[in-house]
Image (cartoon, rainbow, N blue to C red; front, side, top):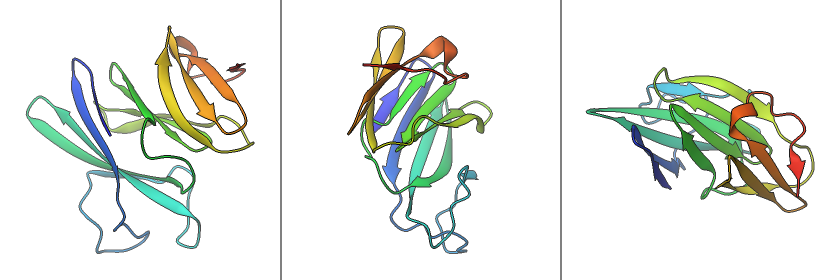
Length: 145
């Protein structure tokens, strides 16, 4: 998956070779495991490459195995918003830090996210949720469509 805005170009692919707690993984500038996944959990790793002018940074984001690998991210200024099944993770591309990690729901699998009006919609197997970009940090009371 490729996305870009006026500042960043981002490539997101699944890293099938990554193993938790292994020394043989590809080199990353940052490895984020916000759900504290264990080697015995059903997890996947997204390899995120962020290009900013002449620099390139690689981030590994570890999360739920369930959900899709395409149409799962949006760029909003410096923020990269990523959907991994039932969680939203916001990574600041400038500081390479997580500014938000929040569960959005408990029911079903969520598989895609798309920009819509002044926010975005998340499509799931049981419901469609809408969030507004200006209040994403609260991530409460999404509009159920």
